[in-house]
Length: 232
Image (cartoon, rainbow, N blue to C red; front, side, top):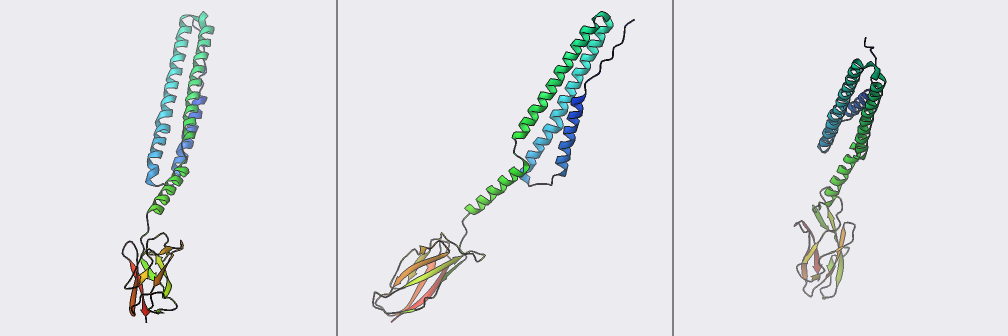
């Protein structure tokens, strides 16, 4: 009569795997929906955890089952070989356990090297801000301030300093602009000097011809402002 020997099947790796999958699914479900840039990242992660790890567990379970059946059949044919069959079964199951553990370790090692959702979003936001900052803002308003003295002697040497201010569509000062200066007569320095605070200065020198002088400041996009001086 063949003696039936019950060999316990290790299943700790299956419980460990199920806990891991449950935790991953919980983390995935509780995360808020992010921008489109994160969709591919989450899909790849879900595919690996949802399909890769179960496949490892299935193959491990099949291998365990085959090892157990083979051992029991060997014992049934040769009862005296039971100790050797049990030893071979234990070694085989230990190798399967080691394979599963190393596979899980390799997976989580790769997972730990991937950037987190927050890091990827932060990088995306930083790049978007950098691109936005790189886009030049066009001037919406150019203002030439009226000097304290709008009347100059028409002697060819009298001069006055004019201040030009440039603003964007929200009324914020714009620096770094190229402001071209023109005058009906006399001389004026052009382009105006950038003071790096949204203001620009230029020097107008009167001519010897009396009359009205229109001074104009023009931004590169065509927006302009002006002031009228008098030479006498």
